[in-house]
Amino acid sequence: MATQNITGEQFAETIETNDIVLVDFWAEWCGPCRQFAPTYEAASEKHPDVVFAKVDTEAEQFLAAQANITSIPTLMAFREKVLVFSQPGALPAAALEQVITAVKDLDMEDVHRKVAEAQAKGPQN
Image (cartoon, rainbow, N blue to C red):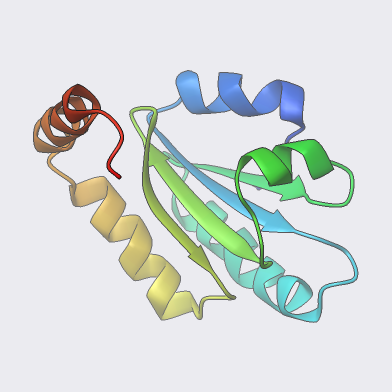
């Protein structure tokens, strides 16, 4: 499955309707973003069970602001609607593979339990 460009309108639906979603926040003028693009595209071909989304931060400035994107490229990974990874910087292919494997191997019952516990405690000061 190739990468797919998504807009702010498609973002929530993409996260909610797919088990694993990786999101690459990028911009055309960003050199590291352009260097990461072929690595991200190649990974999308190797993992058809994962959605590889791309968000153009220039076209989707509101979404980038809502996602607290302060540096690009930034890669986010969602599993079962939960943000489980977020890191700025272009990853080499081996590191991207490690992220994908780690996300696939997560014990999601444990993750959902920890999220519920954190929500029950409320905001930390």
